[in-house]
Length: 474
Ligand code: HEC
Ligand code: HEC
Ligand code: HEC
Ligand code: HEC
Image (cartoon, rainbow, N blue to C red; front, side, top):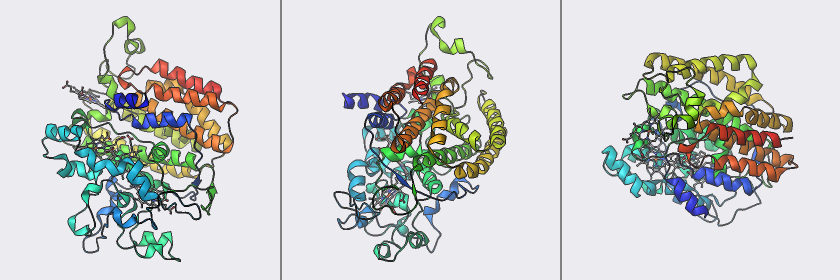
């Protein structure tokens, strides 16, 4: 039954596989914990290109060896996880068996991928740079070692950076993480950098993107939440508090992963909007609320849209999709009320600009960059926030009590709230335990059930379910 449901959902534009996985997770709690980082600045203000450090400098370009170099059973190819030290050593097995990243190249060769490429007129998908940019490690041939295969999809070095310079030495006894970083490893331990790396493909950047043209040709819509997507990936790393994970145990790591991930995705999406505002096609429909256009029509007396009205826009103009701000909005007011107020009003202005039929390109770009800068500043304060049972519960209450407002922001905002509530629930449950955890889990599961058919999304129904979660909180 589960597989049938999954196949049905797969046909929808927004890839719901993550929802079904989270739905399953809502009923099967598996305890995981994390490692701590200090409250360092979340990010300096730089453009989306800055994260693409992978491309390297000419002359000293580091080389990529391919995942085969990590696959030995005594390295990262152990069948079962090791418990005696920090590294599980079965990362390769996890990746090749359970992680969809290892199938990313193969997806290009499937029916949907090939038809997409035919519609777009770009030849074979598996040789189109437009697709390989996110579905493989498409680095210049001069940076490919002999062992490297494009067909291995999104592999170790897509996230961890080129390995040639640290592959040998990183197994030595006195070798440190810092030495690896100096030798070209990407610092995925840093949550901001980690988010940026994921989002380079799961949101896109100036260099590579999924726009409405690609979506109309068959590509799933992109959405992301760091903590949920890391759990679904599934994680191949140990989290703090687990045996063998020595330093800086932070039991509230999930919460920081959630809030940091939200800050980074908001900033990166604003920068993407700014660059799209000066792109070839405008307005870019994938910046708008999909189901404002893609819903079925009803009799006037049954239309919740007409009952709701079209506040702040001309009736029938499609509204901006504000879902990348939905959760950060709930978080940031706890960190800095004044700064959050400023961001809130600038983002409302941007939403107004974007919710017009033909948004002013220059005004949108200027406003988006301005907002991105405000997000950068505020992220420092969000990163410094202490997380504990009280603050986690406060955030859960805040999100679930803002039900009407969140639900009205559309299906994508609802999805963000469901993922955030799930992450916070798991974090709290791991440390404190709810007395009514079975009921809460079922209520959170019901949120994901509501997202299965996004064209039929009904804000009143979703808000009711979010309120139900709220009513169950202590
Ligand atoms: C180089 C690009 C790239 C990077 C970097 C990347 N991903 Fe992905 N990710 C993909 C692609 C492409 C797919 C789709 C694979 C497929 O099914 O063909 C995917 C799929 C996934 C899925 C499965 C989604 C589903 O529908 O089931 C999860 C979860 C995921 N990624 C999480 C992450 C996380 C977490 C990070 C960062 C730690 C990350 N990804 C980094 C490209 C990337
Ligand atoms: C900006 C990065 C990016 C680009 C460019 C990109 N993709 Fe994807 N693609 C993804 C991600 C991320 C996913 C997984 C989405 C999810 O599940 O959330 C994905 C998923 C898919 C899937 C669904 C896989 C599955 O498991 O069901 C197909 C098919 C696909 N992409 C084909 C293509 C083709 C063909 C192109 C080129 C025309 C392309 N992609 C370009 C990032 C990208
Ligand atoms: C989609 C991104 C992604 C891919 C692909 C990926 N990793 Fe990871 N990996 C991560 C993230 C994120 C972490 C957690 C942060 C950290 O510990 O660096 C991690 C952690 C690890 C760790 C633990 C490091 C530590 O110090 O605790 C090892 C070892 C590792 N990965 C090896 C691999 C190997 C081997 C492959 C390929 C078979 C691989 N990874 C593929 C993202 C990825
Ligand atoms: C301003 C209106 C508008 C918005 C907003 C919009 N689309 Fe579309 N979309 C269209 C139109 C028009 C077509 C072409 C339909 C046709 O040719 O029949 C289309 C085509 C599509 C198709 C292919 C048609 C099909 O039935 O398979 C998909 C899938 C799609 N859009 C998904 C999305 C997603 C996902 C979003 C949000 C990220 C989105 N659209 C936002 C207007 C819109």
